[in-house]
Length: 510
Image 1 (cartoon, one colour):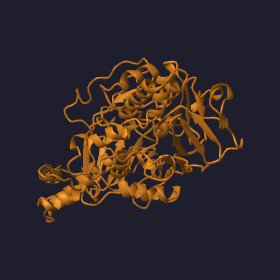
Image 2 (cartoon, helix red, strand yellow):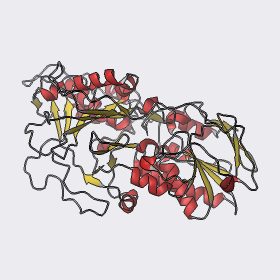
Image 3 (tube, one colour):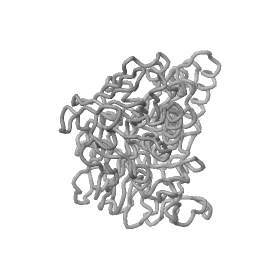
Image 4 (tube, helix red, strand yellow):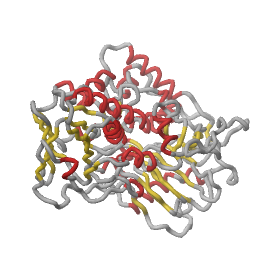
């Protein structure tokens, strides 16, 4: 099956006899599509008339959101370092099993977990590992058509190997989901919206024609009343104290436990002249820093492994969507879509894949790029069971919940100067043959905010990003994390829209 198609779309499942026939048997018990239908990741509410809500926030002209924790084929957005996690555990999960099976994805990346470039690099690593183990003529299956799976399959196919990609869902790209929206004037990214400069993926993005835009976060905190708050280091100082205490212990603990046992909390709840207390700033640091970075509450995050330097450190935002990269990697590959693998059996002669429809497929080697969230469930069983160290890695590593919500408005009511373009999103973009960008904020002494957070209350939306560079299309991108992401993912579109609009009220009052 040629995977090329609009916006990463995939046709109905088909196993190509020409690609999969030969020495190993292909058994098709039925020709109908089967397996659970995933909850659609993008959801769109009808465009309402732009009238003010009860809280003074205008109704958006367009609304799109992701729901990754509800997707049965992802079960979360990205992995994080839960209590007891180490880079060695991630590396152990990447070790070949019986010279037949290799697991890959951002969850196996010791250097860049939870990132697109980490997943891409791990796909290539797994392809090279399985190629070194393969004999001439071996047929190799890659389970998963996300960035890791496509990178692995592309590497193997370019190396002359016989490879087929097996994807449970109906679209390519996995958590790099991009949809085209007339309401937003182009592509809307419903997964990772950032790409890292200097990573191996950077050159690949340019070759694929993926346009990126430099993004230097300028964070502004507002109170529930809409006043701009002067930043305080009290919250991050408390976290630093907790991590210093945790680093001095031989056993890991949660960030919450470290905050308590180190004496960093309780912080004073006595408000200062601005009405904010040190405790308010700790809540702000956790809700707008720790949780969106990990997708988890501090009760689950490793105090030793949490990296504060990853908080609001993006360098480039993907503005053209990921589709061009997905299509480039998938070009010419044999891909079986809507094919839900429920069992992987490894023996001395090869690997048997069993599908939820009762169909089976026999291959020589397999790369598994299922997410940590999926591996934690019984969605896929392994026979024999994975080695104990692999099982431990899967059990210890966490799967974070993080979603995005896109809102388009007639006016950028959240900006102090509604005519101002948000700094940090330079008009020129990299990729797709366009000119490079100048450093953000280089020509302005007081750059305008482009990331908005709430202090003085626990926010439903961890942060709002002003991504409406085009003044004709004011757009906000909300990041919802941890338990708020899981809760809102369970709501229907109308209820979810009401929740996020209520979260915008402080920014309409400023």
